Length: 145
Image 1 (tube, helix red, strand yellow):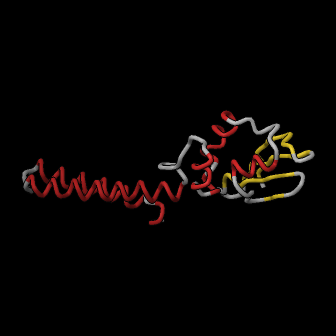
Image 2: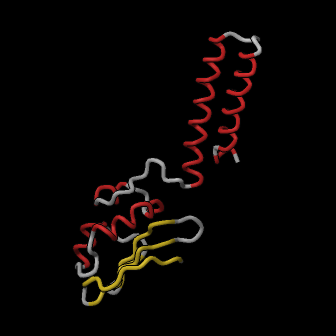
């Protein structure tokens, strides 16, 4: 549970609220309250960062497709840029070599009839499958495995 960051989020909020109550009751100095605010921000920030990794929220993941973004993004997080890829690039009609040049070596399958790239991995793998006929892409679809 600690890996999810939820505990850190709750702890950060609790620190802030406790320090605020103490400040307004006159039981603490303003400097101590400021220190608790910094601690709360660090806890909440760390909690959000961990939650992002655990729940795959996509914070900090490129959503605009480019060959460079595709290459540097983990295969399990490419689903964030999949729609931009399909809207900005006409994959149907491209040769297999052009696709490999654009997207790199396929992660899942690389045959004469299919190029398959891993784009998500929440529980089951999701792939972007490009069907080939005579080395030319004829169909693009997402598949759950």
